[in-house]
Length: 212
Image (cartoon, rainbow, N blue to C red; front, side, top):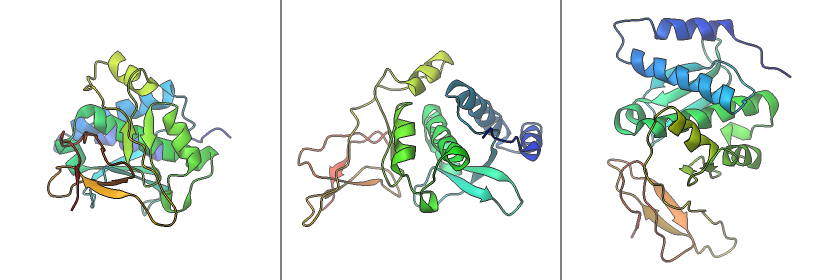
């Protein structure tokens, strides 16, 4: 079923890009431009979101709220203030793409409970080069991918990406070992079942090390 446009979201976008006394005006103008590009280029079955900028805890970079929020708006997408301030432009666009996939899944798919990243969403993301695990941790496949090609077309530079690391779940006596990056004050934690884990955090740029 085609997504019904929410007129209030369009009005909200116009407001956000027109206010002159708001520090996030330029950032929101860019986010809305990229949301439109991602929806059109990837043929996402969703429409103009209600994008917000807020403090997010626990290292969370973005969030999509299912249903309507306290103001009655649908497809609320929140981008973390720290994410905008400290991470690279291409990473913020990647987070936006991730949240738009949640919006699409709400319209035409079967979302997991509490925004769980189920197989349907992970496979959809993988088709664009976004590698998402069950907890929502996102990596990026090496070029060529649809996502990186879109960034390149619009002049957004990305670094040479390391190989994607797939986290393995094991039953019974777990062989998973904890590793952390160098992000301060909240490092990213991952668990893998290999002894010579070699991966670089795309946020802080440091190599993951074994947590003791």
